Length: 341
Image (cartoon, rainbow, N blue to C red):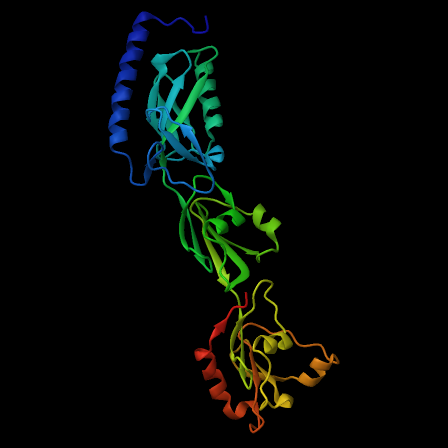
């Protein structure tokens, strides 16, 4: 016999406790906290899904999220605890704000932050150490989840909240938000909140590059992800398509590439007067002369541009770039922004 003998009066007291606990569980289930999600009806789904029957769904197949295997219990979860061949220990309980559950005869058990197999092992060990059951086989089912999510902001196709039950890698979460837009840069910030405060981690990722790093970054429920916009370079003046051009993917763009994106210079362009207008750290404007003929002939390497640089190609009648300096800066606000696909 696996079960240690229990006095008749103790069994009667146990049944009274279990009846009281079961009534309390029914009332608790009716008064579920805000954000709790019933597993058999409205469980938030993410990613690929698999259908499994649930015990209380009358054989109706219910989709289970793919992150269920890594789910960790948290305050508010509503659990069904059962022991094989021991129906008197069948009970329902809710994880309290400390991450504890209370079971008849066993008392308080801490399960917060544990996976389901870890929590089952903890309950089984409590049965053995309390000398109530010699070799218990505990089954733990989650009947209600607490809704948890990550927030994805910035240059993604579908910014907003994404439901997550467990941590996912950064690449998966960006994919759940529809992927990056054409204006996305190579900088992503992940903001995490804990008892010790808020931490912000910065990662570099661009489509088709650095994917291994993005897969190794884990994002947890409650985190905030910000996909930064790429820098913009303005090409203005005597070019065929003046406007702003996004420094996509790796975030690099040189002056020759920028003029090429603007469909080249016009017939009226004064090639010898091409300048790069740049803001210095103090906010003042400086100009860098460009020898475009030497760049085109391969005699000189084109300079790399920085975000917010202005490549200005003057018309031959203009004397200098700063003759209409205020007009150049003013044109950037009305410039059409181009993202080359």
